[in-house]
Amino acid sequence: MPRESAAYKVCACASLTQDMAKPTVLVLGATGETGKAILDAFLVDGGFDVEALVRPSSAKKPQVQALGVPIRAASLDAPIPTLVEVLSGVDILISAIDGMHTLQQIPLATAAKTAGVKRFIPSAFITVAPVSSPVDGTIMRMRDIKEQVYTHIRSIYLPYTVIDVGYWYQLYIPAIPSGRAEYAAMIRNRTQIHVGGAARNALVDLRDIASTVVRIVKDDRTINKSVHVYGDVLSENETFAMMEELSGEKIDRRHISAEHIATTRAKFAAAIASNPDDLHTQQMSYGPDYHFSMHVRSDNTPENAAYLGYLDAGTLYPEWKPITFRDYLREVLDGKATKPYGEWALTIGKNLDEY
Ligand SMILES: NC(=O)c1ccc[n+]([C@@H]2O[C@H](COP(=O)([O-])OP(=O)(O)OC[C@H]3O[C@@H](n4cnc5c(N)ncnc54)[C@H](OP(=O)(O)O)[C@@H]3O)[C@@H](O)[C@H]2O)c1
Image (cartoon, rainbow, N blue to C red; front, side, top):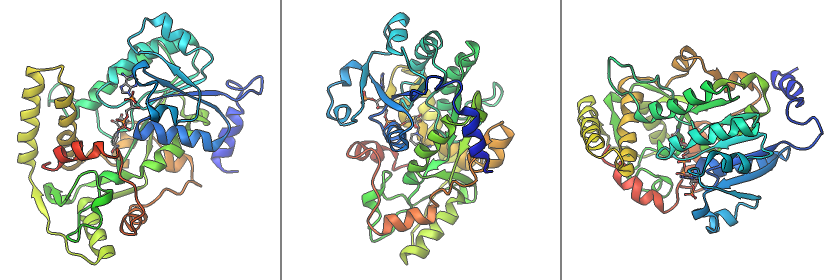
């Protein structure tokens, strides 16, 4: 019997469905890239009552109206008793809030514990890296901030699962001279090879994250664990060679050194220190941090994930066949891919170009 079927039986969901009602899944961040994909995957599964938690200022946005699920509106700054009320009846709380609002999940977790939420999936969904060492300085600021949330969750014994993932294929498209891949590229004209391009990196298609979250939520083996979801492991050099082979075009590579990454990170660190509330600068600092972790330190591998204690989604669900990077590039070259973040990508992607 496949291991997953056994897990479904375990979950059969003694803890979730004693009265045979469908468990209620509440998704925070459902208008975002990750959150929308997750919400849609739960709707496709059909085994859950799916709802969305939105901030009141967004409740009337067309994107919220278009979700097609019941909406619970609350500010994450609301008093804890209000949040407890908002979470009433929720079995699974999933957050895909963006990296700038991470700490807002702390009061939400407190409220989830009181409300009896059976599992909280906080907004993790980043590449594998350790927490920064007190000796060697910051590795990924975003990870350190996320870890504050996980520490709080564990301190109140709230059942949880941390789901980290590969770097999105959608952000790793090598640019080709004809420009025919640019319609799908969030980072435009991406010809940069970082630190020689030899570091292997776990990568994933955004769509595979969502379907795997559904499997993980149904699987009691993943409670109070971290799970690593990835579809391919490739170096930048391998992805560029693959793009050249599939497109028949030669890419003129631009080499980015470890020193350049260090200088950029130092500039951002200084800017953040002088203005800690500047969310835009914080957001822009995440790109060079990713490159430092992925291409200088080579953190983002399945081997390091295993070392750090992650369960491997491919091992948990052997029948799951992720989209490969080669499949994804074919889709891009066939003109069938979608650019993440829509028009907003033009702003953010422009700023990421130089890294
Ligand atoms: N592995 C990778 O390569 C990769 C790539 C990108 C992102 N990520 C990670 O994926 C996760 C999700 O990021 P994303 O880019 O998918 O998010 P996103 O598209 O930017 O969407 C963010 C969502 O959070 C909501 N939100 C923001 N602040 C809120 C608040 N104060 N109260 C309630 N809702 C709020 C937004 O709702 P509104 O409609 O109200 O604005 C939106 O639905 C993050 O942890 C990020 O670090 C990973």
